[in-house]
Length: 209
Image (cartoon, one colour):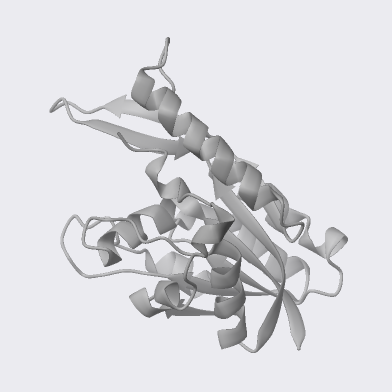
C-alpha cells in the first residue's frame, strides 16, 4: 500500500467535533483517525503531523486555566509517545470582541504547517500523496507551490455548509488547489474510538473556557 502523510489542523477539527457532538466535543483516537482516513484512499499513514496550541494562560493564570494546561500537558505527553506522530504547537490568543464576547484563536499554527509541507520532498522522498485535514485557505499558496515543484498530490478532507455566517463556510480556492476533496462525517470519528485505558484526554477542551 502506498505511503502517505496526514496533516491535521486541530483548530478546525475542534469546531467540527463540537458540531457533530451537538455541543459536546467528540473523543477519538487521533492516530487511528488519521489511519482510517488514509485507508479510505487506499493509502498507509506513515506519519501524522498534528498542529495545536496550549490553552490560554493569563497573568497570572486562573485555577481553571492552570487545570486546563495540566490536562493539555498530559494529552501532549501521551500523544508524543507515538513516534509516528509529530506535534507542532502554536499559541492561543484571547480576543475580546466589540460586543464583549471572548474568543480564543490559535496563532502560528498555519506557519508551522506550511513549513512542514515545504519539507515533504526532502524529508519523505517516497511520499507522493498527502492528506490535509483543514478548511484554511491560508494553505493555498504552499499547496500550489509543492504541486508545481514536484509530483505530490494533495488530498483535502474538510467540512462545509451553506449556512450564512457559518464557521464552516469554505472558499472554492482551497478546493480547487487540491487534487481532490472529501467531506468529513461523524462516522469518521465514530470509527476511531478512544481507548480510555490509554488515559488520553481530549485536547479539544484546552482552548476554550
